[in-house]
Length: 422
Figure 1 (tube, one colour):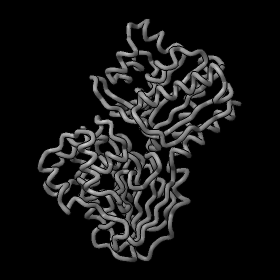
Figure 2 (figure 1 turned 30 degrees about the vertical axis):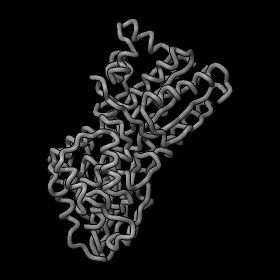
Figure 3 (figure 1 turned 90 degrees about the vertical axis):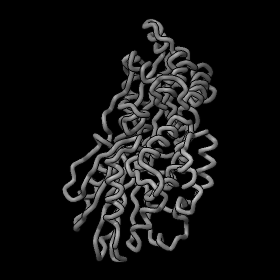
Figure 4 (figure 1 turned 180 degrees about the horizontal axis):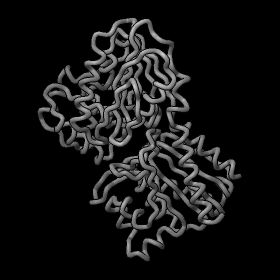
């Protein structure tokens, strides 16, 4: 297979993964019957505006609501208000929207229905700190968590216990209305409590868990915030709470669905596919080393898988930022993978976030091939130095190998594919 063909196939697989997670193709089948009373739509996340648009197309009755999405991810709706706010670090626009959302669901009745459209990114888009904690406190803690190497589950545990809207608190505010959660998963394992920090599902974790995570990663948290975390006010809504009796939760798109869609693209090209997992976590560079070793063993000896083949994986790795680079877990993974492969002939790879944003950059990820390291050396770039500086984005941008999708308006976590073509 020629290099151009290999790269085109990887791009097509990534696009198929993104397309499979579009709410327009999946949401309608999960809608409940209309209620006797009002229908209120609320939601947050990178895909929430697209979800609201798909809901309006499928819902014939009256509806009102408010959904918060990332800047640049708005989709026009006629009955549901769409607000844009900041991600991954929250801002005042998200703070105002979160407060308005809590007001919108106040004073509902048992005849009313609340449709909750939740996707990844909702944690930063719904910042509503507990009393005694400022938005600036949450911004600083969020920044520290993003650089700490904590898993998404650990980060969201801390976020839930600093919030008056996450960890089931939004659902409690909707009581006694019926709640229908439509979730688009971006987390390993698809646990609803970790999707946007679970604003409309009960939370089994505790304040003690949050404090343990802060200490585990040496997060610099002000003393007054720790005081709040030690109080009863910081505890989230637990399973069995009488305010959450009537909640139905459906996953309308998941990382596994995206990997399966990409798999079909490769199989149509006559190349067998092996899905290694949709919930792989760990330091991005370590995952890159392991995946590189698997690819080398397959390419050189054919003992793990027969060649040609594609190795697919998903999940959410982490980057502990120690250098002066821009981070980005997909590009860090891919650079580590390339260093492990050392130009192995016939092996190509792509890694990208299905939301189009890797870390804090408007870049989905990158693509690598047998010539990646050689081209970098010719430009005077030292790949190992770039990895040490956490500068995967700078590295692949210099080679012209960054993958830029623009806003995809969906989010089912990271996509990784290794094509072993010889």
